[in-house]
Image (spheres, rainbow, N blue to C red):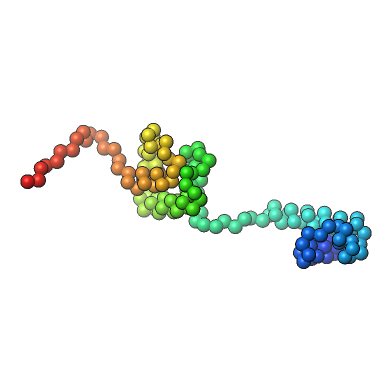
Amino acid sequence: MNKETKVIFALVKVYGNLTPNKLRDLLGWDLKTIECSLNQLEISKALEKKHFKPQIFGHSKIDELLDGIKLILKIDDYKESRQYQRMYGKHLVNLCEKIGDEEFKLRFKAIYMDTFKRRNMNSLKFIYSELKSFIPKQDGIESVQFQQIE
């Protein structure tokens, strides 16, 4: 940045948005110099924005899990509000850590393969409750016999 651009940058910072005519009145410079300086200022601001990385708040595992489930289910958004999405996302991450990644994937796949349950999988509350209370199907067990207690 040249000297004129630095002066204009300082004035814009103090006074807010200034038109070239107001800057000409304040500084006594010609409009061509002011406009060149303003262009340089806009270019430097654009470069700063390009290299600026937004801060990421929250738990990154929650974001990864929620985005991954959205991709698998091919949905744009969940049924719940953002606040409840974060809450159930945290519950799902904790459940995943508790039961392990492989078991989590197996349960999720089993629920996804069930056509009746798949219709409700746009709700994180439903996904969480199904994963938490998952009982695997056991082949070979046709009926359960109970002994009568006397």
